[in-house]
Amino acid sequence: MYSSKILLIVSSLFLSGCVSLAPEYKRPDLGVPNSLAQDQNSSVESFDVKLSIPSWKDFIVDTQLQQVIQLALEKNNDLFLTALEVEEARVRFGIAESEQYPQIMSSMSGDYSKGLNNGSTLGKKYSAGVDISYELDFFGRIKNLTQADKAKFLASKEMNRATQIITMKTVAEAYLDVIYNQQLLIISEETKKNYLNSQSIVMQKVIAGNANISDLEQAKGQVQAIDITIEKVKSEILRNKNLVDFLTNDYTDKLNSQTLNYVLITVPENIPSEILLERPDVMAAEQNILSENANIGVARAAFFPSISFNTGIENSNDSLSGLFDSSNGIWNFIPKITLPIFTGGKNTKNLELANIRKNKAIVNYEKSIQVAFREVKDALILKSSMKKQLISQIDYVNTLNNILAQKQVSYHYGGLSYLNVLEAQRDLFTGKQNLLLLEIEQQKNEINLFSALGGGLIK
Image (cartoon, rainbow, N blue to C red):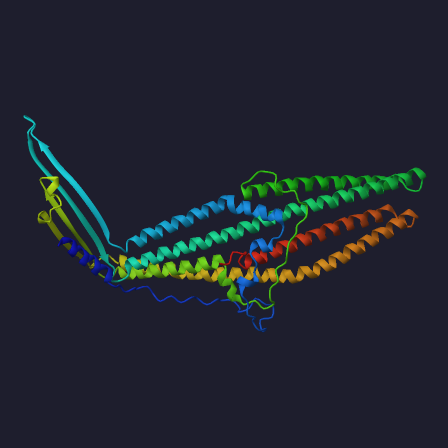
């Protein structure tokens, strides 16, 4: 009989509906131009970011860099922390979700007493019971609390993805710095060989009486200067490798390659700005709005009555064998209604605070889209510019090679001073260095564009 009553009450609790007092959510406007193209009057092409942006393993085809990034994704401490934050948010969401269901508790106790003088048994009593407590969520307080924690959980997942993208980008840039300095070391050492060869030629001309000591000293000074450059570059290589070790949390020797294989991202000229909504940081910002929106519902529900029930069955008996005899049972049912009458304005202030926090979340969301728009736009501008710069720089280095060859011939026949040769050699070294820097910066810009478009982690 009692069990049927319990089932009836529990069933009615589950069948009870609730009204959410949270505002209806409407996604804020983008707040940026509809297209990322240079010409805002051009039509926006249909663009599927999931199809057009490759995964990071397809984008970064360099095997060694893939391995280094994979190490970072597995061992980087920042990623460990964000993963734990995701788990923490998941557990909080689970706790909040459990409040939507009846809380069922069971208990059992025994009371056994003896006299102090003769040790005779004075009495025995055993009791057992089941208690059920539940809050009828008529105004959606618990539901909105659950929705708020769910949104925070989803936001933490997106921030974990955003941290992965930042980690991949940082590791790739550090790796490129290693490659740059290794290539610069090769150029510097080749330049030193040329300087030493020039020094030998000047020495021969001095011995032959066709050059003065000043030319020889200038040639020696040039070799000494390139030695300083070589030592600086070597130290930079070690520092760059140390950064990669730190980011991967792995201190084994893993950087042997001196070149980088990579692919460029092919994107339509007119990319719609809506793709920015797929970025993890933007998605996290939107989940924060949803969380604060639900909290408004919680604050509004505080103005209305809270209705809860406590019900249970308790049996007691002098013997264990008769403990579960239904004839000894007691059923209780205790409803409770809590109505706010005077709170000193606390509920009003809580609602005001919830609205302010939602407005802050909206501003942060709009800002995250603006930052994303700028990052993609900047990368696209540089993508076009660097291609032209590289073509011009290659032509310039070829011209500097020709100028040096001509000045060396003129110096050999006495038409120019050695100072002209020195200037041409320095210009060529600087030109090669700038060409290498442009190549690396172009690759870094591709990584920036790749990251700005979602970093190959689009779901």
